Image 1: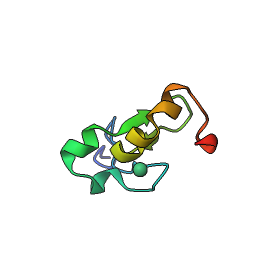
Image 2: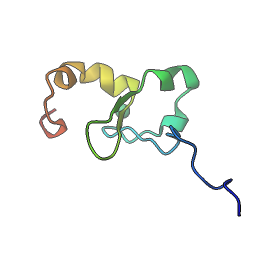
Image 3: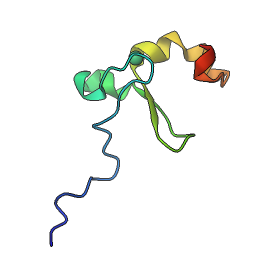
Image 4: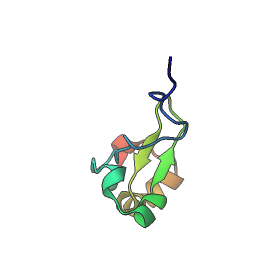
Length: 68
Ligand SMILES: [Zn+2]
């Protein structure tokens, strides 16, 4: 029995931007820090730094993503 295969808590390596589909692992480490994670749903929703900047007003007004 080994615990080696268990995902580490807080492991977001599979994260992708929900708007442009870029993988967080493709972003450089500094840029990845400015990615936004929305954990209000069942699944964490990621937004890359570029899309977050573009949609910051929609995010702050809590507008559902389908209206962006
Ligand atoms: Zn994006």
